[in-house]
Image 1 (tube, each protein chain N blue to C red):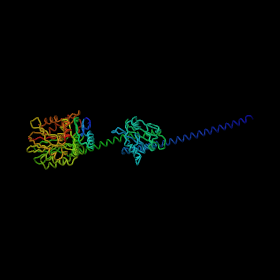
Image 2 (cartoon, chains in turn blue, orange):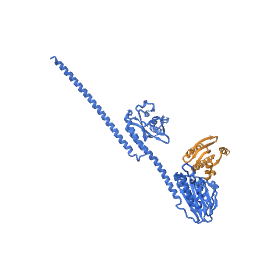
Image 3 (tube, each protein chain N blue to C red):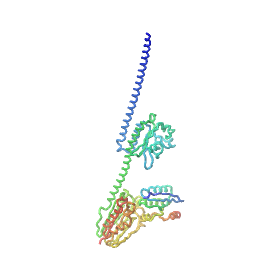
Image 4 (cartoon, each protein chain N blue to C red):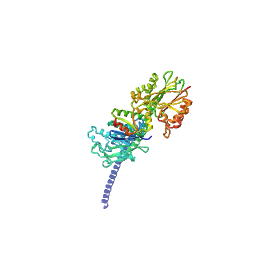
Amino acid sequence: MMEQPASGAFLATFLFFLLALTSGALFFAVNVIRRLRRERDELNHQKEVIFGFIHDVGDVFVHSEDVDLDRMLSRVLFYAERTTHAGAGAVYLYDKTEDAFRARAVSGIFPPLTGEPDARLEKAVSKSQHIERLIRARPIRRGEGLVGEAADFGVPILIEDAERDPRVPQYDHEFLRIRSILLVPMRFLQRILGVLVVVNRVDGRPFIQADLSLLQALADQASVSIHYAGLRDSLDEKQRIDHDLHVARQIQTALLPKAIPRVEGVELAAFNHPAQEIGGDYYDFIRIDEEHLGIAIADVSGKGIVGAIMMAISRSVLRAQAAVNRNPSEVLMAVNRVMFEDIAEDMFVSMLYMVLNVRTRELVVARAGHERPAWSRAHEKSFTIIDSPGLALGIADKETFEGALREETVRLKPGDVVVAYTDGVTEAMDEGGEEWGVDRFLGAVSNAAPDGANAVLNNVQQRLMRFVGGVEQYDDMTLLALRILE
Amino acid sequence: MRECIIKKEEADELDIVRLDGALDSYSFPRLETTLNGLRDSQRNRVILDCGGLDYISSAALGALIGFARRARENGGDLKLVRLSPKIYNIVELLGFHKILEIHSELDEAAAKFRNG
């Protein structure tokens, strides 16, 4: 009997404990389930974020082949903000010419990370536009501020509580306050291309490590596209220049004689060696009448398409005038009158224009600022340089040009050779930067002169090519030669 | 080719622009900026000291004529001094010595500016 109450108390205690234990276990179990649920939700959320992110990344870069850099960057920024729930962001790209970083894309009200907003902010109609202009206009030097730091060290920077970090600028304006900031470098093959920055989560919470990882992944993807976009830009520019040079070359080729004319009593020869960059050389043989042959050689000061068009103008005017006038200085005067009126004041054409009377063998030389022709007499080793004063075409007014121009007349004999050339020949350079020079040129001419105009041409070409070796020349090389036949 | 160093000096009513190196299509735009700056601030009496110049492209020479012409229109001039024989030969070949005023010494050009 004595045991009864005890057993009753024991039972009660036991029951109490059992209840407590069960409820505790229940409580514990509920908590575990709650936590697991929360974790599951969070994981699901993160999964959504990551799937969303993967989708976004795919979306940004799937069309990167045909999207221009600025459009691609604003898309990167849009998805960067969406992934990290940021209120604003900017992409800074490295500019080689400035040796600094510049904001190429800005979204939201992105507070300046270096310097202060200027006084005009207060008066600005649209404060966000004013701030964006400010950010785009202000370059960030290497090592300057947080952007410079992220770029210099090539590491991401996550500042959870930005208002307590001395590296972050503090602003009085509420809309410029930086509460949390995240910067990731954009790299490609060890080279820093730029920095991707986001500020202030829209939910007011600080950025976390997961935001950093996602943003870095996005930046890594973007870097590949930025790298190739940069390559494409320079390739486009190169292709444009190549195209221009190609067009200019086509014009020039079309203007040169297709064949050397056959003229009784004279052997004629000419070559034009086009350069890497167009120098704008031109030569021409014009049958004026039965007795008179016009011979022209010219060098245009401009390069590319402009130079080619200048050459086309000079050729048309020259041919029109030559057809009606046998006097070379008068022809050049007429050409200058047209050119001085019509072409840009800085441009000019040097031209040598000679008229040969094939019957009397009289050669009249007029020189508009061009290289002087060399006259090699038969059976003589020395040269006569035919000098006649004159100015280049298109740069002097009528009075100055015509006051300076004087023609020279020489009477040629059978076996005599006359050569005319452009400075590309004598200024051709070898690997060491040495010029071929007038002396070597005249040596090559005199050596072959007894064998005729074509022999002179071949000898000059051979020796010139041997001298320059494989070195690409920057100026056109043009040479023409004539020999009086028996 | 040597990069062109451009130095500007003011001497009373004159400006002296000293060139050292090569003037080609790459370096000419910098000289153009200097000369445009002088023109914009109404400084039209300019001496171009070519003592250190070892190359000049024909396009650059053409542009110098443009500057000289505009300086003359504004009552001044662009005079060239101390040209090397090689550069003088190019100028003479093109006949530009008939357009540009060229002096062997700086003082000579300065005196010409003073005495009109």
